[in-house]
Length: 419
Image (cartoon, rainbow, N blue to C red; front, side, top):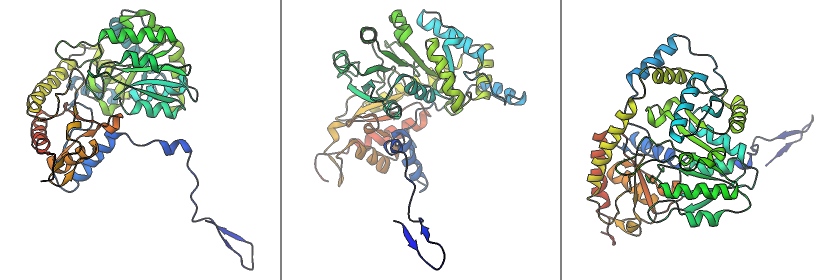
């Protein structure tokens, strides 16, 4: 509303009631479901209540002392200036050797980029690969950031349900390919489901990409965490012909327990990395310099032994959690094949009651667990799934034990009628 003030002097326009408009794209972007679930937990904690937070996917371990010392030394030695836009060449050389070992194909320094966490790398890919209206196939349930970043690039996410076992639904993926399809996103071990994709499924996806001239965005940030007979397979290793159309996304966040340091990396054909350089030069200039130097020193001097420590910690928590969750009634066991999430299908509880509280949606189930069991979980709506909730089990074992015991008591008290 605009008010006009007319006096003896000039006409004065009062625009104090108006707000300049926002860009339309900003109206379609919302905070991630995991972040919002964590905020809900923190808001309860402000009321001096004891809430155990199972929302955010990070290790409940401190980084290796050797890595921490390397970071301190880097600061003392003045590591405060820009590195190469794509990251320190010596660190990229080490990562190129790792990718070569994982895939059986040679990767050069010019085919590796470091980014400020995996998310910026994925964001750049959306900008590089997609024109408005282009489509990207994403298996569902999915990490929430995937479709959001596609929309930011003007693309359309095409969600394809997993099969009943949580594996890639190959017939559905084939059927989803259209003339506008540009890429398929593969995330294994999968966040949120905890499923590790089979060799057979990945081979079929590679064939689809080759047949239809598609890119594969292969997110393997949880590759260090698989259990039992479940093995992480790199899609390029399975089908080397896919190498020139595959971008491999990885991160030090899970592997080294440094999520807050924001240091991700990728391997991709050289022309992709050249475009990443251009984008990153205008967005972050380069990744975290202290983190880069610390990780470089760590990997150059003694290898990567912390991965074994992290894997044992998460594996022990997984065994503890699965044992506790076996007491759940009306809820199937979580897959927990890889990564560090229990993904529980709570659909049998929907429509039920906890006391007078009616559970209509999975958001209601998460709200119940927060209010009654004092634990924070992520509802499946964050992952385009109306039937499940996600519980991170990579934190402290004492919290996992206490929190899951409380969850069992709350969920097993749900009935089909008001009590």
